[in-house]
Length: 393
Image (cartoon, rainbow, N blue to C red; front, side):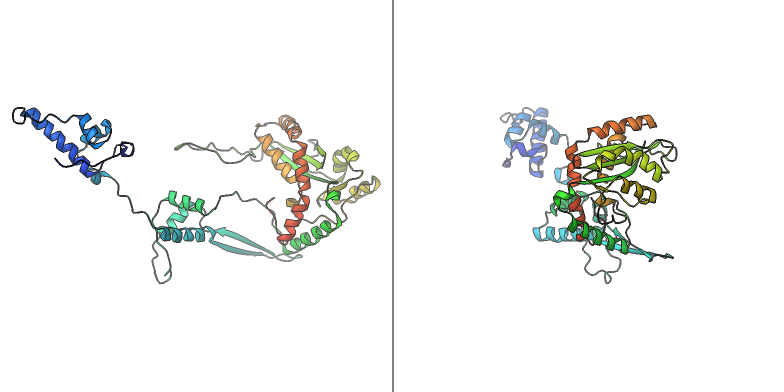
């Protein structure tokens, strides 16, 4: 009788090699012959399932599983490719890193009459997913002379995912930032540099930041869902022109937060009179010993508004607020937080939106608002460091 190979039961997991498979079927054929002709070989007993499992040190279920099979394991198992050496893995990951950063730049020029031409540069990444990188790695070039150094590697998408994780890359959602012209970038750098020099940390804590925003009945939450295999994510329904909209104005500062909801008859066409009546008059008690910051919208810079500020001793920054700078205003982050919280409650009409806005605004802790306001100097320094470009704040 051939010697049975030594196996470890905990590692078999229902699989045996061709040698053990042959032994099992040889013993089984011997049992069949002994049952047919019991008088020919009376000295050798039958090899039971338990005895087979004991000899090979495997489970009884593994024995019965392989006895039912008519094809040896090597013929039905998928061939396992040999593991690549570390040099090949490093070379593949270097190529994956190159593909992750591969991009092209699209430059578009728009002719303007009275201002400098608008030049827009758009960066498009060529391979944005593990599946796209896998296809590029496995692509065979049609002309080897054009791509002599093209690496051809056939791997699975799971391997690419592991390579991306090993390289330290993570997927982030790109922030939407305003389009800035060159003269706007220069003005942002100059104005924020002057503002950093004019005010220290203690003086910046006296700043009040304000801005308007819209709140509607659409879903403004995170558009990602965790789904099981085969399950489809729930669609997000978006209303068009018929959606309900509410116009808000928020002013915040260190130790200060206040919300104003514009009446339905003035929302959408706010002028200087409506801005003074609904916003400035209601927050007159906040302005003493504070520096009031607002953007350059027409209601904010109108002559009537400036006259009211002078008459009520409202202090504004000594440096003008540069245009197209929502990334420097901490109140914009509060807008996003409030919109996500309100949309999560599913408002439908104006009364529900107004009710939920007030309730969710009161839930926002003052410590969170103070932290946003104290980040103003850091925002200005980042804008200066990137030469006036928008920052993902």
